[in-house]
View 1 (cartoon, helix red, strand yellow):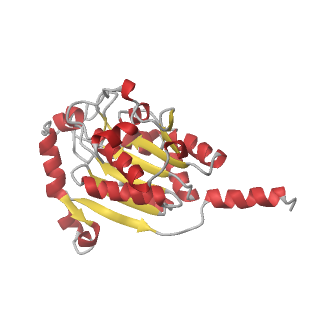
View 2 (cartoon, one colour):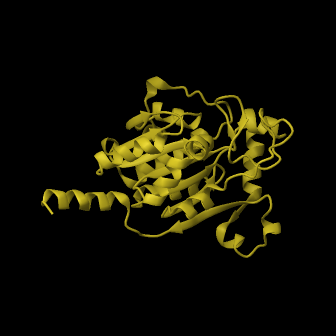
View 3 (cartoon, one colour):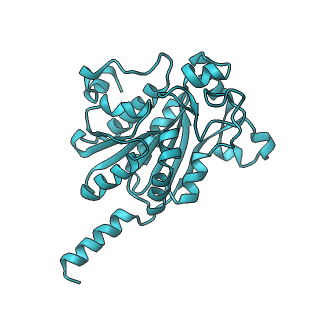
Length: 273
């Protein structure tokens, strides 16, 4: 996607973004826009919903039907949009804290219902907007403003959470693996059912600075060096996988979801049965 094509999807008057130099959120956003371009979708046929956080500011910059909602409630709002307008492609932009902490219950039940939503989790392992607190995905032992001596909690694995809860398309890529991210987001949007993209992105300002890597290129080099394909990962032990980022497609199945069941109910009610 060239510059002019990217500008087609942006609210130019809202730029520049609030994102820090080196932040990976712009890379994830561009991957989403390129995926939409590849699918040939009309702007009027897309709704993008976000909650609160660095990633969630993205809805202010893109020229679709957008909603910037409450902390942790993006999926709940998106569910309402999808049920009211099932013809729309509904995308949720959320962060690891927004989706897995205060919004964790909504995440679980969207996956369980197999709602026809695409949920893109900008996963930078920290709360970036509010001061660098540790999040549900901060690795054990890593530091944050609220964990100056190291995080004592075991982190959530977003992919495993989505699998367990019932999402029907799940993939993970890092900002280094841009073309894979475009491919996975494109498949997620086209998929009917709950799609979850665990988009690993860098936060040099907080996560990096507290964990000895405040240089964005260095953080992306770490993504390159640590990433391993899911098929290769299946052949390795847990000890061999320590410190690795497993990327790829984890689930891709067809299954009836809540939106189609809801449509059937409406038809039955219209018929008086």
